[in-house]
Length: 404
Image 1 (cartoon, rainbow, N blue to C red):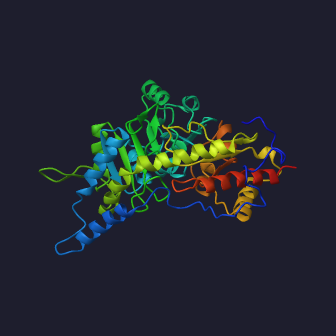
Image 2 (image 1 turned 30 degrees about the vertical axis):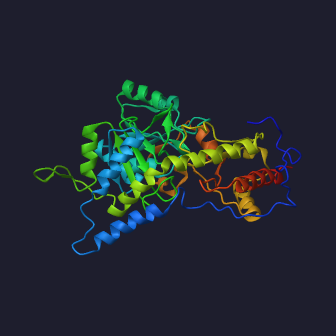
Protein backbone atom coordinates (compact mmCIF):
# COMPACT_ATOMS: atom_id res chain seq x y z
CA UNK A 1 0.00 0.00 0.00
CA UNK A 2 1.23 3.47 -0.82
CA UNK A 3 1.38 6.57 1.32
CA UNK A 4 -0.72 8.88 -0.85
CA UNK A 5 -4.46 9.45 -0.63
CA UNK A 6 -6.41 8.30 -3.67
CA UNK A 7 -7.46 11.71 -4.95
CA UNK A 8 -7.30 13.45 -8.30
CA UNK A 9 -4.74 15.88 -6.89
CA UNK A 10 -2.27 13.08 -6.17
CA UNK A 11 -2.76 11.23 -9.43
CA UNK A 12 -0.66 12.94 -12.08
CA UNK A 13 0.25 11.67 -15.55
CA UNK A 14 3.85 10.94 -16.44
CA UNK A 15 6.20 13.77 -17.43
CA UNK A 16 5.31 15.11 -20.87
CA UNK A 17 2.17 12.96 -20.95
CA UNK A 18 -1.03 14.85 -20.23
CA UNK A 19 -4.61 14.07 -21.01
CA UNK A 20 -4.57 16.80 -23.64
CA UNK A 21 -1.41 15.60 -25.44
CA UNK A 22 -1.76 11.86 -24.86
CA UNK A 23 -2.28 9.89 -28.06
CA UNK A 24 -5.01 7.33 -27.58
CA UNK A 25 -3.96 3.75 -28.11
CA UNK A 26 -5.63 0.38 -28.34
CA UNK A 27 -4.22 -2.06 -25.79
CA UNK A 28 -6.31 -5.24 -26.01
CA UNK A 29 -5.92 -8.19 -23.67
CA UNK A 30 -4.49 -10.42 -26.38
CA UNK A 31 -5.19 -14.13 -26.58
CA UNK A 32 -1.63 -15.17 -27.45
CA UNK A 33 0.41 -14.69 -24.30
CA UNK A 34 3.83 -15.75 -25.54
CA UNK A 35 5.88 -15.31 -28.68
CA UNK A 36 5.01 -17.14 -31.90
CA UNK A 37 7.73 -17.00 -34.56
CA UNK A 38 8.70 -18.54 -37.88
CA UNK A 39 10.45 -21.53 -36.29
CA UNK A 40 7.16 -22.51 -34.62
CA UNK A 41 5.32 -22.26 -37.94
CA UNK A 42 8.07 -24.26 -39.66
CA UNK A 43 7.93 -26.99 -37.00
CA UNK A 44 4.20 -27.48 -37.42
CA UNK A 45 4.45 -27.27 -41.21
CA UNK A 46 7.23 -29.87 -41.34
CA UNK A 47 5.20 -32.39 -39.33
CA UNK A 48 2.06 -31.85 -41.39
CA UNK A 49 3.89 -31.97 -44.73
CA UNK A 50 5.67 -35.19 -43.78
CA UNK A 51 2.50 -36.79 -42.46
CA UNK A 52 0.44 -36.24 -45.60
CA UNK A 53 3.16 -37.37 -48.01
CA UNK A 54 3.53 -40.87 -49.46
CA UNK A 55 3.51 -43.44 -46.65
CA UNK A 56 3.11 -40.65 -44.13
CA UNK A 57 0.95 -40.54 -41.01
CA UNK A 58 0.77 -38.74 -37.69
CA UNK A 59 2.21 -41.68 -35.74
CA UNK A 60 4.59 -42.58 -34.22
CA UNK A 61 5.51 -39.51 -32.22
CA UNK A 62 9.28 -39.01 -32.03
CA UNK A 63 8.62 -35.36 -31.20
CA UNK A 64 6.77 -36.24 -28.00
CA UNK A 65 9.67 -37.86 -26.09
CA UNK A 66 11.98 -35.06 -27.25
CA UNK A 67 9.57 -32.44 -25.91
CA UNK A 68 9.03 -34.36 -22.68
CA UNK A 69 12.77 -34.67 -22.09
CA UNK A 70 13.34 -30.97 -22.72
CA UNK A 71 10.43 -29.94 -20.48
CA UNK A 72 11.55 -32.18 -17.60
CA UNK A 73 15.06 -30.78 -17.84
CA UNK A 74 13.88 -27.17 -17.95
CA UNK A 75 11.50 -27.60 -15.02
CA UNK A 76 13.90 -29.60 -12.85
CA UNK A 77 12.02 -32.91 -12.87
CA UNK A 78 13.01 -36.48 -13.72
CA UNK A 79 9.91 -37.18 -15.81
CA UNK A 80 7.44 -35.23 -17.94
CA UNK A 81 4.30 -36.65 -19.52
CA UNK A 82 2.74 -34.56 -22.30
CA UNK A 83 -1.05 -34.42 -22.44
CA UNK A 84 -3.67 -32.33 -24.22
CA UNK A 85 -4.40 -29.79 -21.44
CA UNK A 86 -3.67 -28.86 -17.84
CA UNK A 87 -7.23 -29.89 -17.03
CA UNK A 88 -6.60 -33.43 -18.22
CA UNK A 89 -3.25 -33.41 -16.39
CA UNK A 90 -5.05 -32.63 -13.13
CA UNK A 91 -7.75 -35.19 -13.94
CA UNK A 92 -5.14 -37.89 -14.52
CA UNK A 93 -3.58 -37.08 -11.15
CA UNK A 94 -6.95 -37.39 -9.43
CA UNK A 95 -7.56 -40.74 -11.13
CA UNK A 96 -4.07 -42.01 -10.34
CA UNK A 97 -4.59 -41.15 -6.67
CA UNK A 98 -7.96 -42.93 -6.63
CA UNK A 99 -9.84 -39.76 -5.68
CA UNK A 100 -13.57 -40.41 -5.43
CA UNK A 101 -16.77 -39.99 -3.41
CA UNK A 102 -16.16 -39.52 0.29
CA UNK A 103 -12.74 -37.96 -0.27
CA UNK A 104 -11.80 -34.32 0.25
CA UNK A 105 -9.40 -32.26 -1.84
CA UNK A 106 -8.11 -28.88 -0.64
CA UNK A 107 -7.75 -26.11 -3.24
CA UNK A 108 -7.70 -22.30 -3.34
CA UNK A 109 -10.86 -20.45 -4.31
CA UNK A 110 -8.87 -17.88 -6.30
CA UNK A 111 -7.98 -19.92 -9.35
CA UNK A 112 -9.31 -21.17 -12.67
CA UNK A 113 -12.33 -23.40 -12.24
CA UNK A 114 -10.61 -26.66 -13.26
CA UNK A 115 -8.28 -26.62 -10.24
CA UNK A 116 -11.31 -27.57 -8.18
CA UNK A 117 -13.47 -28.95 -10.97
CA UNK A 118 -11.30 -31.99 -11.65
CA UNK A 119 -11.60 -33.12 -8.03
CA UNK A 120 -15.33 -32.47 -8.00
CA UNK A 121 -15.76 -34.36 -11.27
CA UNK A 122 -14.39 -37.44 -9.52
CA UNK A 123 -17.01 -37.12 -6.79
CA UNK A 124 -14.76 -35.61 -4.13
CA UNK A 125 -15.80 -32.80 -1.81
CA UNK A 126 -13.86 -29.63 -2.60
CA UNK A 127 -12.48 -27.83 0.44
CA UNK A 128 -11.52 -24.23 -0.25
CA UNK A 129 -8.69 -22.93 1.95
CA UNK A 130 -7.71 -19.27 2.10
CA UNK A 131 -4.91 -17.63 0.14
CA UNK A 132 -1.94 -15.62 1.34
CA UNK A 133 -2.77 -11.87 1.21
CA UNK A 134 0.60 -11.01 -0.37
CA UNK A 135 1.12 -13.74 -2.97
CA UNK A 136 -2.50 -14.84 -3.51
CA UNK A 137 -1.19 -18.42 -3.45
CA UNK A 138 -2.73 -21.05 -1.18
CA UNK A 139 -1.85 -20.31 2.47
CA UNK A 140 -0.21 -23.38 4.12
CA UNK A 141 -1.54 -22.42 7.58
CA UNK A 142 -5.07 -22.14 6.22
CA UNK A 143 -4.65 -25.51 4.52
CA UNK A 144 -3.52 -27.27 7.67
CA UNK A 145 -6.59 -25.98 9.51
CA UNK A 146 -8.79 -27.66 6.87
CA UNK A 147 -7.18 -31.11 6.91
CA UNK A 148 -9.38 -34.00 8.06
CA UNK A 149 -9.02 -37.81 7.92
CA UNK A 150 -10.83 -37.62 4.55
CA UNK A 151 -8.28 -35.28 2.93
CA UNK A 152 -6.73 -37.19 0.03
CA UNK A 153 -4.88 -34.43 -1.87
CA UNK A 154 -3.91 -30.75 -1.74
CA UNK A 155 -3.73 -28.67 -4.94
CA UNK A 156 -1.78 -25.43 -4.46
CA UNK A 157 -1.71 -23.08 -7.46
CA UNK A 158 1.39 -21.13 -8.48
CA UNK A 159 -0.84 -18.11 -8.96
CA UNK A 160 0.05 -15.74 -11.82
CA UNK A 161 3.54 -17.28 -11.91
CA UNK A 162 4.39 -16.74 -8.22
CA UNK A 163 5.54 -20.00 -6.63
CA UNK A 164 3.45 -21.32 -3.77
CA UNK A 165 5.31 -22.01 -0.52
CA UNK A 166 6.74 -25.36 -1.58
CA UNK A 167 8.82 -25.77 1.57
CA UNK A 168 5.79 -25.37 3.86
CA UNK A 169 3.69 -27.75 1.76
CA UNK A 170 6.46 -30.35 1.88
CA UNK A 171 6.25 -30.22 5.68
CA UNK A 172 2.45 -30.60 5.58
CA UNK A 173 2.69 -33.49 3.13
CA UNK A 174 5.15 -35.42 5.29
CA UNK A 175 3.33 -34.64 8.54
CA UNK A 176 -0.10 -35.76 7.32
CA UNK A 177 0.95 -38.17 4.55
CA UNK A 178 -1.09 -36.27 1.97
CA UNK A 179 0.11 -35.93 -1.65
CA UNK A 180 0.60 -32.44 -3.06
CA UNK A 181 -0.39 -31.92 -6.71
CA UNK A 182 0.65 -28.48 -7.92
CA UNK A 183 -1.41 -26.57 -10.46
CA UNK A 184 1.45 -25.05 -12.46
CA UNK A 185 -0.72 -23.76 -15.31
CA UNK A 186 0.78 -20.28 -14.83
CA UNK A 187 4.26 -21.43 -13.97
CA UNK A 188 6.49 -22.53 -16.84
CA UNK A 189 9.82 -21.01 -15.83
CA UNK A 190 8.76 -20.26 -12.25
CA UNK A 191 11.30 -20.94 -9.52
CA UNK A 192 11.07 -21.31 -5.76
CA UNK A 193 14.10 -19.73 -4.10
CA UNK A 194 16.07 -20.08 -7.31
CA UNK A 195 15.09 -23.70 -8.04
CA UNK A 196 12.68 -24.80 -10.80
CA UNK A 197 9.36 -26.05 -9.42
CA UNK A 198 8.77 -29.09 -11.66
CA UNK A 199 9.74 -31.72 -9.07
CA UNK A 200 7.76 -30.17 -6.20
CA UNK A 201 5.27 -32.36 -4.36
CA UNK A 202 4.15 -35.55 -6.02
CA UNK A 203 3.48 -33.87 -9.37
CA UNK A 204 3.03 -30.55 -11.15
CA UNK A 205 0.47 -29.91 -13.90
CA UNK A 206 1.28 -27.40 -16.66
CA UNK A 207 -0.79 -25.63 -19.29
CA UNK A 208 0.23 -24.65 -22.82
CA UNK A 209 -3.12 -23.09 -23.67
CA UNK A 210 -3.13 -20.12 -26.05
CA UNK A 211 -2.77 -17.29 -23.52
CA UNK A 212 0.00 -18.95 -21.49
CA UNK A 213 3.66 -17.93 -21.80
CA UNK A 214 4.12 -20.76 -24.29
CA UNK A 215 1.54 -22.64 -26.31
CA UNK A 216 1.32 -25.90 -28.22
CA UNK A 217 -1.08 -24.81 -30.95
CA UNK A 218 -3.63 -23.35 -28.57
CA UNK A 219 -4.05 -26.28 -26.20
CA UNK A 220 -1.76 -28.70 -24.41
CA UNK A 221 -0.41 -29.60 -21.02
CA UNK A 222 1.98 -31.81 -19.12
CA UNK A 223 2.63 -33.55 -15.81
CA UNK A 224 6.09 -33.48 -14.25
CA UNK A 225 7.22 -35.65 -11.35
CA UNK A 226 10.23 -37.33 -9.78
CA UNK A 227 8.18 -40.40 -8.85
CA UNK A 228 8.79 -43.14 -11.42
CA UNK A 229 5.76 -45.24 -10.40
CA UNK A 230 3.42 -42.26 -10.55
CA UNK A 231 4.88 -41.26 -13.93
CA UNK A 232 4.28 -44.75 -15.30
CA UNK A 233 0.72 -44.77 -14.03
CA UNK A 234 -0.31 -41.44 -15.55
CA UNK A 235 1.58 -42.28 -18.75
CA UNK A 236 -0.60 -45.36 -19.15
CA UNK A 237 -3.80 -43.60 -18.12
CA UNK A 238 -3.36 -40.93 -20.80
CA UNK A 239 -3.34 -43.50 -23.58
CA UNK A 240 -6.04 -46.12 -22.94
CA UNK A 241 -4.02 -47.89 -20.24
CA UNK A 242 -1.36 -49.14 -22.68
CA UNK A 243 2.07 -50.13 -21.44
CA UNK A 244 4.51 -50.35 -24.35
CA UNK A 245 7.34 -52.87 -24.32
CA UNK A 246 8.34 -56.20 -25.80
CA UNK A 247 4.74 -57.16 -25.31
CA UNK A 248 1.95 -54.58 -25.55
CA UNK A 249 -0.23 -54.64 -22.43
CA UNK A 250 -3.31 -52.83 -21.19
CA UNK A 251 -2.91 -52.72 -17.42
CA UNK A 252 -5.64 -50.27 -16.42
CA UNK A 253 -8.71 -48.59 -17.84
CA UNK A 254 -7.43 -45.43 -19.48
CA UNK A 255 -8.33 -42.50 -21.68
CA UNK A 256 -7.11 -40.65 -24.73
CA UNK A 257 -5.49 -37.54 -23.25
CA UNK A 258 -2.58 -37.52 -25.69
CA UNK A 259 -0.90 -34.49 -27.21
CA UNK A 260 -0.74 -34.52 -31.01
CA UNK A 261 2.41 -34.69 -33.09
CA UNK A 262 2.22 -31.08 -34.40
CA UNK A 263 1.65 -29.87 -30.83
CA UNK A 264 4.74 -31.67 -29.54
CA UNK A 265 6.80 -30.27 -32.42
CA UNK A 266 5.81 -26.72 -31.58
CA UNK A 267 6.31 -27.45 -27.89
CA UNK A 268 9.99 -28.02 -28.64
CA UNK A 269 10.40 -24.67 -30.38
CA UNK A 270 8.24 -22.82 -27.85
CA UNK A 271 10.16 -24.23 -24.90
CA UNK A 272 13.44 -23.14 -26.48
CA UNK A 273 12.36 -19.48 -26.17
CA UNK A 274 10.43 -19.57 -22.88
CA UNK A 275 13.28 -18.02 -20.86
CA UNK A 276 13.36 -15.11 -23.30
CA UNK A 277 9.58 -14.72 -23.02
CA UNK A 278 9.61 -14.70 -19.22
CA UNK A 279 12.54 -12.24 -19.17
CA UNK A 280 10.67 -9.86 -21.49
CA UNK A 281 7.57 -10.06 -19.31
CA UNK A 282 9.65 -9.48 -16.16
CA UNK A 283 11.23 -6.39 -17.68
CA UNK A 284 7.82 -4.95 -18.55
CA UNK A 285 6.30 -5.85 -15.17
CA UNK A 286 9.14 -4.13 -13.32
CA UNK A 287 9.01 -1.09 -15.59
CA UNK A 288 5.28 -0.66 -15.04
CA UNK A 289 5.71 -0.92 -11.29
CA UNK A 290 8.51 1.64 -11.30
CA UNK A 291 6.52 4.11 -13.40
CA UNK A 292 3.26 3.58 -11.55
CA UNK A 293 4.86 3.97 -8.14
CA UNK A 294 2.69 3.75 -5.03
CA UNK A 295 -0.92 4.72 -4.62
CA UNK A 296 -3.04 4.12 -1.57
CA UNK A 297 -5.80 1.68 -2.29
CA UNK A 298 -3.87 -0.04 -5.09
CA UNK A 299 -1.81 -3.19 -4.47
CA UNK A 300 0.61 -4.21 -7.20
CA UNK A 301 1.76 -7.85 -7.39
CA UNK A 302 4.47 -8.98 -4.98
CA UNK A 303 7.59 -11.00 -5.64
CA UNK A 304 8.15 -9.75 -9.18
CA UNK A 305 11.74 -10.96 -9.63
CA UNK A 306 13.78 -13.57 -11.48
CA UNK A 307 11.91 -16.41 -9.72
CA UNK A 308 8.50 -15.23 -10.92
CA UNK A 309 7.01 -16.86 -14.02
CA UNK A 310 5.37 -13.54 -14.94
CA UNK A 311 2.25 -15.01 -16.51
CA UNK A 312 -0.33 -12.54 -15.18
CA UNK A 313 0.05 -8.97 -13.91
CA UNK A 314 -2.69 -8.86 -11.30
CA UNK A 315 -3.53 -5.56 -9.58
CA UNK A 316 -5.83 -5.35 -6.57
CA UNK A 317 -8.01 -2.28 -6.17
CA UNK A 318 -9.61 -1.50 -2.82
CA UNK A 319 -13.12 -0.83 -4.09
CA UNK A 320 -14.16 0.52 -0.68
CA UNK A 321 -12.12 3.63 -1.47
CA UNK A 322 -13.95 4.26 -4.73
CA UNK A 323 -17.58 5.20 -5.15
CA UNK A 324 -18.13 2.68 -7.90
CA UNK A 325 -17.83 -1.00 -8.74
CA UNK A 326 -15.03 -2.99 -10.29
CA UNK A 327 -17.24 -3.52 -13.33
CA UNK A 328 -17.41 0.25 -13.84
CA UNK A 329 -13.63 0.58 -13.50
CA UNK A 330 -13.17 -2.12 -16.12
CA UNK A 331 -15.75 -0.48 -18.38
CA UNK A 332 -14.05 2.93 -18.10
CA UNK A 333 -10.66 1.45 -18.96
CA UNK A 334 -12.13 -0.28 -21.98
CA UNK A 335 -14.46 2.46 -23.25
CA UNK A 336 -12.46 5.62 -22.50
CA UNK A 337 -8.92 4.29 -22.86
CA UNK A 338 -9.29 1.23 -25.10
CA UNK A 339 -7.39 -0.80 -22.49
CA UNK A 340 -8.40 -4.44 -22.27
CA UNK A 341 -8.39 -6.03 -18.84
CA UNK A 342 -9.29 -9.48 -17.55
CA UNK A 343 -10.48 -10.86 -14.21
CA UNK A 344 -8.32 -13.64 -12.75
CA UNK A 345 -10.50 -14.85 -11.13
CA UNK A 346 -14.03 -14.80 -9.75
CA UNK A 347 -14.25 -17.09 -6.72
CA UNK A 348 -14.54 -20.68 -7.95
CA UNK A 349 -17.62 -21.28 -5.81
CA UNK A 350 -19.41 -18.36 -7.50
CA UNK A 351 -19.79 -20.27 -10.77
CA UNK A 352 -23.20 -21.84 -11.44
CA UNK A 353 -21.72 -25.34 -11.66
CA UNK A 354 -20.88 -25.24 -7.97
CA UNK A 355 -24.50 -24.76 -7.02
CA UNK A 356 -24.96 -28.50 -7.46
CA UNK A 357 -21.73 -29.92 -6.00
CA UNK A 358 -20.49 -30.34 -2.46
CA UNK A 359 -17.91 -27.87 -1.23
CA UNK A 360 -16.81 -25.90 1.82
CA UNK A 361 -15.68 -22.26 1.46
CA UNK A 362 -15.81 -21.30 5.12
CA UNK A 363 -13.06 -19.14 6.67
CA UNK A 364 -11.76 -17.71 3.38
CA UNK A 365 -11.97 -13.92 3.92
CA UNK A 366 -8.79 -13.07 1.98
CA UNK A 367 -10.00 -15.04 -1.03
CA UNK A 368 -13.46 -13.48 -0.92
CA UNK A 369 -12.02 -9.96 -0.79
CA UNK A 370 -9.34 -10.54 -3.43
CA UNK A 371 -11.83 -12.04 -5.88
CA UNK A 372 -13.75 -8.74 -5.74
CA UNK A 373 -10.60 -6.61 -6.23
CA UNK A 374 -8.41 -8.23 -8.86
CA UNK A 375 -7.92 -7.02 -12.42
CA UNK A 376 -5.25 -8.25 -14.83
CA UNK A 377 -3.54 -5.64 -16.99
CA UNK A 378 -2.42 -6.25 -20.60
CA UNK A 379 1.35 -6.56 -20.16
CA UNK A 380 2.96 -8.98 -22.61
CA UNK A 381 6.43 -9.67 -24.08
CA UNK A 382 5.62 -7.39 -27.01
CA UNK A 383 4.36 -4.45 -24.89
CA UNK A 384 6.41 -1.32 -25.64
CA UNK A 385 7.66 1.38 -23.28
CA UNK A 386 5.19 3.83 -24.84
CA UNK A 387 2.35 1.41 -24.21
CA UNK A 388 3.44 0.98 -20.60
CA UNK A 389 3.44 4.78 -20.18
CA UNK A 390 -0.05 4.90 -21.62
CA UNK A 391 -1.25 2.08 -19.37
CA UNK A 392 0.10 3.83 -16.27
CA UNK A 393 -1.78 7.02 -17.13
CA UNK A 394 -4.95 5.13 -18.05
CA UNK A 395 -5.09 3.29 -14.74
CA UNK A 396 -4.19 6.29 -12.57
CA UNK A 397 -6.66 8.62 -14.23
CA UNK A 398 -9.43 6.03 -14.36
CA UNK A 399 -9.12 5.56 -10.60
CA UNK A 400 -9.01 9.32 -10.07
CA UNK A 401 -12.24 9.74 -12.02
CA UNK A 402 -14.08 7.64 -9.43
CA UNK A 403 -12.86 9.52 -6.37
CA UNK A 404 -15.42 11.89 -4.87
